[in-house]
Amino acid sequence: MRYLVTGGAGFVGSHTVLALLDAGHEVAVLDNFSTGHRAAVPPGVQVYEVDLLDREATTAVIAGAHWDGVLHFAALSLVGASIAEPFYYLRQNYLTGLNLVQACAEQGVKKFVFSSTAALFGGPERPDPIPETAMIQPGSPYGESKFLIERALRWADSLYGVKSACLRYFNAAGADPLGRAGEDHRPETHLIPLTIDAALGRRPALKLFGTDYPTRDGSCIRDYIHVTDLADAHVRVLDHIEERSVVYNLGNGQGFSNMDVIQSVERVSGLSVPWEAAERRVGDPAILVADSTPLRQQTGWSPRWSALDTIVETAFQWRKNHPGGYAA
Image 1 (tube, rainbow, N blue to C red):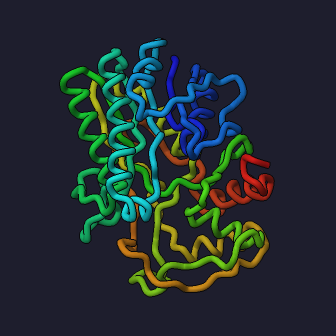
Image 2 (image 1 turned 90 degrees about the vertical axis):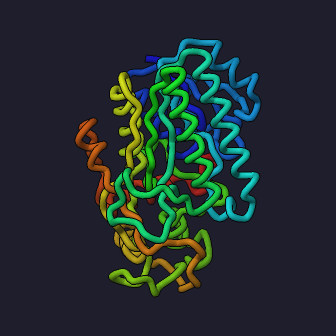
């Protein structure tokens, strides 16, 4: 099969490109490289340097070849930045996604896998763990922009027959176990790489935002899913959207606290992690854990790299070996 991956030079997108190639598929990447890295694209993979805001250029890529499906990862993804610049985030993420969905609908692409988010579940009352049926209450413009695209995909299915999988995932982490790809955000905002860099002395002491939550150690609890497991789920759902569109929450199903992460990095690295307590961030819930039961039951997916130390080990090895990220 031949698939187009938008945002394929980014963290999750690049790992999904590897998963598709490992499964024997032909892959091309569309990216504007505003945050992605050219070095994250495997050699020999065709690249379309296109901004999805350009509807004509986007349509030309979709119309210019046969695509068995499109996997859409390209988006702005910082929750805090979306609160600071709400209309910019809403405009960028929704219009880029809408241009792509429209092009796929008009050009007869029948499979669409969408990188959605657990940020849809931002309301004050959330079950633990969170199922797909939980109330949708985006806690940020970022989450809202993702939900708008989910709604657009419902119409693409209803009116054009585009079958989609919206994967609402929680905290992607880790790195390719074979060392082919890793996490290199600029600026970096994710806890595991920040903690690793603090241990390696590449940044000041880690700030732990909130130590007084109603959890076992006072720090937030999150569901960390290995990025390779995440990529595997994207490949699997492609075989399950022939007849109907689906929505899945995608996570490890386990909750790890911020303190768990610090202790894991110390075990894996043998180094001490300098950290200091800081005030809670606005909107940070105490616990976010996914219920991925439907995905497991319907696709046979199961995380292989589920232990926190395993997730941290792959991330640590990649960051240790790439002190300058993809620029090294």
